[in-house]
Length: 226
Image 1: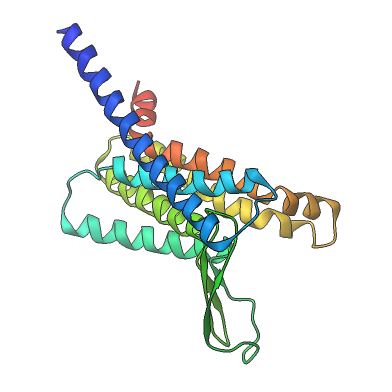
Image 2: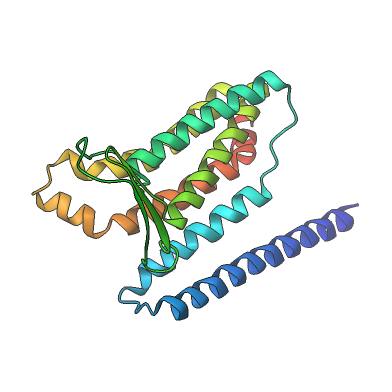
């Protein structure tokens, strides 16, 4: 029996590794094609790595997460919470840029040729706001929203929903807090400058930690239960 369980776990891990390699290879191939087509020179390789990492982890998190079966009412509430969470992330994370005066811009669409992962980024501008659709941010925030959706469904039927719910909410707030930290000390301070210089590093660490906490939420719940 133990041998069969071990073989099953090995088989699952092998499939997970295969899926991860498939997603990573596809993303890297698309990034190389984009580099050759757009003629971009990579100045800071780590930024490209971060962008591709956001996409690969986000796709895998959604692919491997299966929300628990539940009734339509709970699903609607979970969708509402996840949608609100995505909107907040989009605003504080720079996908939706609202700091524009009425009449300051014009309606238009262009493509920003940023580093792979962050670009190509369609930019949709209006007189009141703009959408900056960086692939890494869009995929990453959608993945987080989907994990929040699954977490809300789990918490609705869990015996430890109070503990797990609090834990999940704290972890969910990290990307939002990280995006706002540089504004706490004022735009001209040394702390704000450092936060700007390392914003991609910090946001990537926070993103990966949040995905990990939300993806393995059943394991956390079991540990609290024990």
